[in-house]
Image (cartoon, rainbow, N blue to C red; front, side, top):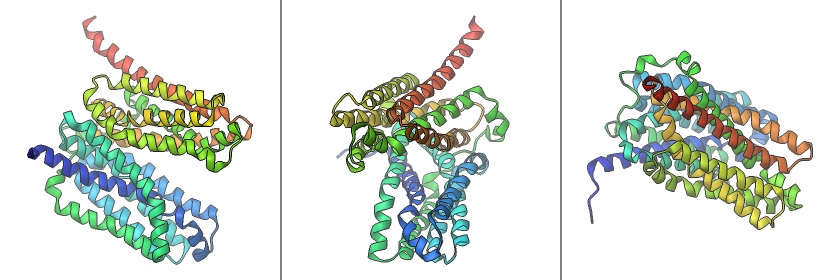
Length: 402
C-alpha cells in the first residue's frame, strides 16, 4: 500500500482536528432547543425566555467574530481556537448545574464568546497549514464538520436525556469539547499557529468597512443567507400551501435540500482545487439553483418533481461552498485571512435577522410561491455582488496598462 506523504499526513491531522472542533461548535448551537420542555419545567420559565437564551448565544457569537479575527492575527489561531473551544464546551457542561434562569443566560453568553473564535481561527490555521492545491478539500471537510454538528445535536441530546437525564447529557457533550481542547493543546505542534504574519498590524475596522471588495463579499454572504433561510425555515409551509399537503409530506422537499447540500460539500472541495475561475463557477451554480427553485415554486409539476428540483437546488448550493471560501481567501490582500473570514461570515447573521421577517410577511399575505421566488431573487442579488467585485478587480488590474 502506498505510504501517505508526511506533508499530506500533517494536513489530514490538522484538518481533522479543526473539523472536529467545528463540528462541536455547531453541535453546541443546538443543544438547548431539544431540552426546552425540560428547562421550562425545571426553571419555571416560558418559551420566550428560553428563546432569549439562544439569542444571547447568537448575539455574542456574531458580535465578537471580527474582534476575534483581530486577536488571531496578533497571537495566532492555535491559542484562540483552544481557548475558545474550552470556553464554549465548558459553558455547555456547566449548564448542567443551572438552578435559575439567570445562570442559563450567563452561561449562554459565555458559550457564545467561545463560539465566536471558530471561523477566524479555523480558516487562519487551515490557510497556513494546508497546501493551496488541496485547500478546497480541506475547507469542504471543515464545512461538512459544521453541517454534521447541526444534524447530530438534536437526536444526540434527546437520546442522552432519555437514557440518563438532561444534566448528564450536558455534562457529557460539554466534556467532549473540553477533552478535545486538551488534546489540541498537547498536539500544538501539529496545529501550528496560523494568523500571525507581516500584515498582522494592518487589521482594523476601518480597512474592513472602507474596502469595496470586502463590503461586497459581506453583502454576498448576507444575501445568500437570506436566500438560504427562505428554504430552510419556510419551504415546508410554502409547499404545504402550494400543493395542499400535510406538513410531514411537505417536509420531504426540505429534507432533500439539506441532504443534497451536505452530500455535495466534499465533491465541491475537490472541484474548488481544480476549477480556475471560482467566481464564475459559483455564479453558474447559484443561477441554476435559483432557477430550479422558481420552477418548483410554480406548482405546475407533481410534488415528487418539486422535491427533485429542491434537492438539486441544495446540491448546487453545497457544491460551491469551498469555491466561495477560496474566493474569500484570494480577496485577503490588506487584512489577514482569519479577520476577513470572520467579518464576511458575520453577514450570515445579518441575513438570518432580515430573512425570516420577509418570508413570514409573504406567507401571511397569502403568497407561498413567493417564498421560493424570493429565495431565488436573493441568490441572484448575491451573484450580482460577487460579479461586481470581480469586475472592479479586473478593471483595476487593467488600468495601469491602458
